[in-house]
Image: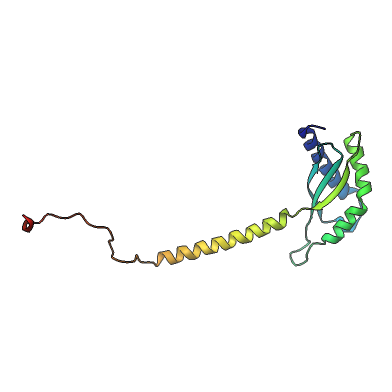
Length: 150
């Protein structure tokens, strides 16, 4: 079992190697918009999980996750060979590609924050026109001594 620091370093190196290979060496057009976001390696350094996301070319077109997944599966052997050559470890880890849902989660959080800002603005707008309920001065005033009480 390798230490956790070594596994983190190896995962970082694997992510760099895979990203570089996708950019310069793998000539599949379906991988043009694929970005490697993270990599994780098991404690025994035998299996690596590579997280990726597919960026859309424009806002109207949805990214092709199915095509990118198929292209990554077909390029798995080439990428594993590149990882083995680039890391120099005794056993080259197997690569598993998992779509990363951080961008979609971030988009969802941004939408929720925008709704919360709108609700806060509505509350602030209503508060400026609000008047207190009841008397203008709801607190009891201290009793004043008058000369009649004597």
